[in-house]
Length: 165
Image 1 (cartoon, rainbow, N blue to C red):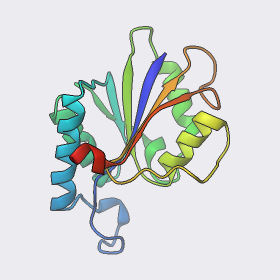
Image 2: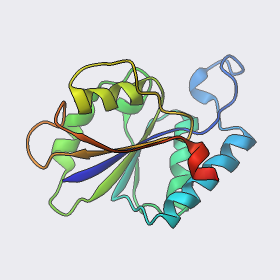
Image 3: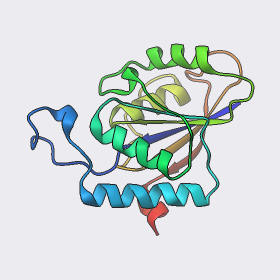
Image 4: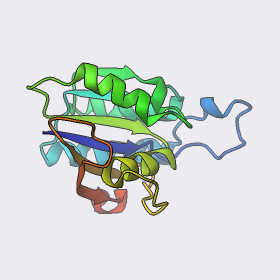
């Protein structure tokens, strides 16, 4: 079994403040809080075999903060994690990537996509009930064989508020 951590990017510049929404960076507060969350995850002894990130700047910055905190040595962009990305594209990547030694990895992306992906992995359909707060984390255990869709188990759901206290 492999543990998957879905992590939403930190607080970013307001929607509409940049001509190209893909270029909205983390705010100073977003950077600061994301660093605190990353530090807390490190204190909890989390370690990822790889961090995959959306190509959008705010997600990329969040992933780089996680890497700099020592949570992973490896970081890659994944187009499927961009807003509107397809879970099945990521599942194809995962099936090619997974190894018997893989223990945990993180996906850094956006809401509502991360919430939808979690629901698909857990229940096989959208419930429209899981919301990942900025710099929040959902932990899901993926099955060792077969498709993870509808076959995974939730083990952690936390907002950044609990990681910052």
